Length: 359
Image (tube, rainbow, N blue to C red; front, side, top):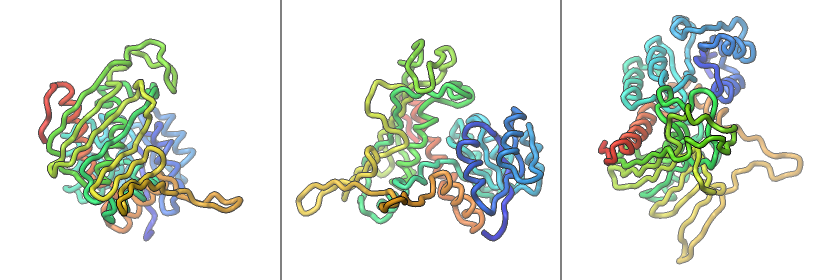
């Protein structure tokens, strides 16, 4: 690193505390110098735990953005404010990492892309599942052509009963949707990235409110309130790309299934296939025989040593700061994230109209 970067955190809730701030704290050339939240106590707590000496606390993000000494902004707020805050931060001369999904609507996501181009500042979106060891290894296999042309894929984001009951997750106005925009977005991003295919042609989608209105339902975080459950409980899509490739997208917070997979993908190529369902598995045909290979991703292998591996959030934050320091594209580009938002919106539109959506 050539210098120390000063960071402002906007939104000091769960994702900021669970990912952004702990991982940023580990980087030597980073200082978190400003914290903003509409609940002042949350910003104060974050500053006390993660802030550099003299860190400031705000309840109005626009006041934070007037600090010319801040280099980078992390936007960790509800989906409906992503575009507004990100664009304001870019126009204030800051680089921005915004949490996923990029925005509540594709139009807002496009405005974010345009703002990054207009200002010349870097913008990335928090798709942290790209940085898992299995994702990193599979991406290398794809780049090396070991799977050949990937023409069919599945993006998996299925929970049996794990509806988030806190914050604004169940509020369609704030979030723009339910499991599709919350966890389906991760699975879709991962799948498109592996395929390196960002040209969707047509989308057909369905969404359901089948279990959301049940009282006292079994749930990982306790029963949800049906009156507040205004988003879908499940949504599914089929995407056909311009080159003819097909992606099946599945997402649910509550579904009667034992096939539970989240932020995973299955890839089928001309030379081999891969899936993340039980670790990372590669399958194919060699010498007129079928084969399946389990990829060993764990470090260690000797007594009293489990290996030192960098966590996905830690790698995500390090690569983001390196992209700024070395003036290179971030791992997740805004153009890629826009396509994810475009497809998610098309699934919702198709589910509402009963018609395919052409992009």
